[in-house]
Image 1 (cartoon, rainbow, N blue to C red):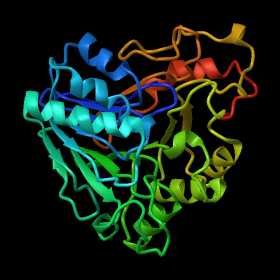
Image 2 (cartoon, one colour; image 1 turned 180 degrees about the vertical axis):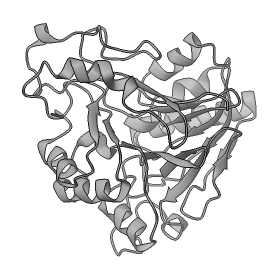
Image 3 (cartoon, rainbow, N blue to C red; image 1 turned 30 degrees about the vertical axis):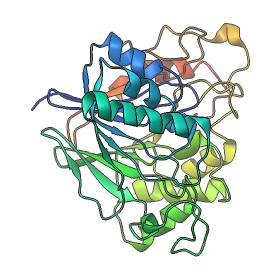
Image 4 (tube, rainbow, N blue to C red; image 1 turned 45 degrees about the vertical axis):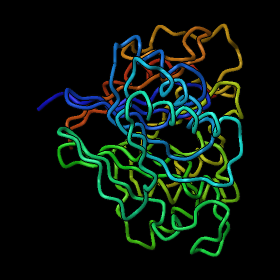
Length: 326
């Protein structure tokens, strides 16, 4: 079996997951800035098979602009859902970058990712599209969804599940909210996965009760590992009620944040970067703000080991009595 790796980047307050194998390279979301582009240049990646944007918020789409404007990086396909009410400069720049990539690299743009979409299949892994609702995608953000509530970019987030060798490895849910979770429950969707990339960076899911949302999500996913893609000085995520919800679900998951929340340790002198993996750069490394940093996990189907890649992290966080993940 070819070696397939799943990485959640320490990208600050934003999201980016990378799946790489001998035969394919997939990027899911890209936080603002040129960090992801620089990683591709450093690793001499000249082709991205699929760039999937979960939704139109800048902490998920902003970094895609630099990738799509780089004439040395060919993106074969861009997947996203329309958002007619988003009027930010970032969203406008992203559209212009997509147009540029279509001209230079003949990039194919797929603007339909929903619960009725076919799986995205690669030789070594596949991605299931679990949400949003296919019916809600008929009208999209700004309209009234089948739940009777107004749809926005978060409720229309693309929810993906990574499958390797027949095993449900990771749930990558963008910034899904409680309405999406209700939809998935009503559709009797199985959400089981060994790894959960927690939505909203561990922050409040808009109008939903964060503790209830976290508890229900973790009970449905039953993960062995919950990852929070956060920034040390942005909103102090993950918030305590989310942590409480995860723990009350009794899923028994290992919890890890890409960066050390300020409330876990407010003394910068105690922080270090010696425990970090060098598989991928960690944005918080320079200032010692990374906690787990960028996490790379080698996939082995149902035997995927989430413990070994985080051994150094476990030893590191044991030095902080106020850590949220204890």
